[in-house]
Length: 393
Image 1 (cartoon, rainbow, N blue to C red):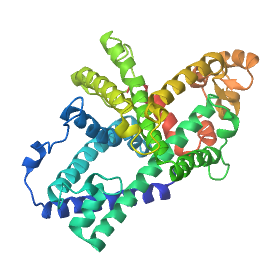
Image 2 (cartoon, rainbow, N blue to C red):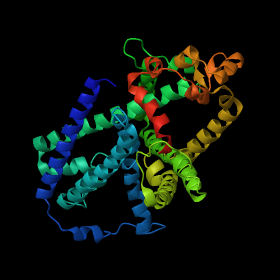
Image 3 (spheres, helix red, strand yellow):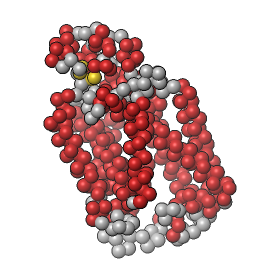
């Protein structure tokens, strides 16, 4: 990532943060009711199987859509010195900022709303933007909404960059179809242009589908969050198992700790597993209010979340079992250091698999970091270093 790109991103982040703070103050200035409104169910939950708790679970999905993706905050943190300390702190700051700023906007938005019984408050084309326009007026409210659009663009750029990094890394290790093409690096820009274009096209397709079938877009949005939470569980569950077996931290590891929660590590790990499991179940539950809320009311739309996640999980496991595990390994064009300074182990490996270099062999090669950096895009170089240095995180 170039310095110009980083500077632009930081400038947009500052604009968005200033606008959010001003919006909080403006909504707080127009408060017309007290906090007792948060203890009034207003009849919601009547006739629901779980009563108000069922309605609360549906409302809790809002936090599920917000309190995820915080790991992308580490992307810019990895572009700094000492990412082993910087990246975790960036994640914590992102979570705390999202909690405080988002919570205050919702708090003052509800307290300042002219009429909470107005159907537009809960409508898809209403919600917070309707409250902002109603409370702050046309031009002033639209100015704030424009700043919110800037914040959304910043988040989109961060997620796009994270997706490109992931596709490039997996293709570099020969774990995707067309890995050789997807891992190509532009010799001038030093970026994986093919992966960037493919990710962009894949992101546009759901938007085109949304024009004709908004129900499918809702399902895709929910499924994407479910898969993110499942990926978090793939980290927190094995880590909790290692902690309970007293295999974490790794004994004899002399690498610098960098960031540690100390005695809070185990309870936080347990809470992470419980929270991730609960939110995954809550998000994937086939509620008609979420997965089948607009016509056409079809059974496959309501059960689309479970069907898709099950199909992806089974298909991915089968693909790994029959193919991926036999071909994984760093592609030869991304292992310049190994080719220049082969170790005894890598020499034996090259005889049987001349096009691939296993990750363990690449790590053990006594190559020059400059050789490796010349083959890896600028936006990805530090990420690779962090994955090696930060193995103890």
